[in-house]
Image (cartoon, rainbow, N blue to C red):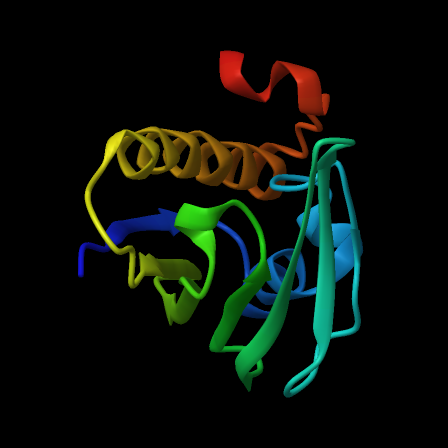
Length: 143
């Protein structure tokens, strides 16, 4: 099964980065337009992107401040039962992130578009945590 993989560094403390990738207010700064959920094992999150795209995922792995993993439980067909994982490691006064979106059924067009979108979202996360830049959701594709 194909996987989307990204690795990058953020000049921000490990705990700050983990909050941004695990708590609803943090996720709203870089991934979702609005998110609901409480971090913890087997907790469910609702990810609101647009009225047509309201998806759900449950936390599969929760190991603060190093690892969070979501199993997508309600989404577009290609995303169903895929796993979104962020592993964090403190490095040189910042945080190294190993991002993965695993278990796609095939490397189709949606897979390739999602890989591009993830790169954009992760750049928004980096800009937010390093520079305090809060980019409006509708402009994220311009970053």
